[in-house]
Image (cartoon, rainbow, N blue to C red; front, side, top):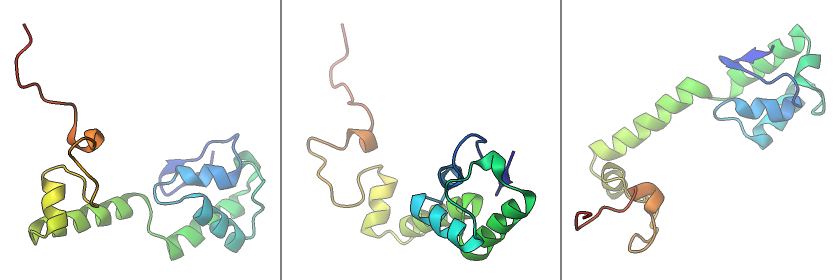
Length: 121
């Protein structure tokens, strides 16, 4: 089983799809990684040799921020916005949509379930 950046990749999937299991790698970046490593996109994960896995791992570590480091960086960016009390930081703090969406009728995903005004009998 291929293990890259602490993530076990599924054996029976194509390698370009399997790489998307890593946080921070989508379809486009996965294809770019495979092109740079010189590996065919259509190969299955179980067909990879140890040298292929090492080359993929080296490309990812050299060029991309993924998994724990990316999560940490994103959470620090949000924390910075909250600390400087900018508009986006206030929206994050109040759990409201950050990017200008309307909240009068929508935004249930961000705001959570409706709160009842009157108790149920």
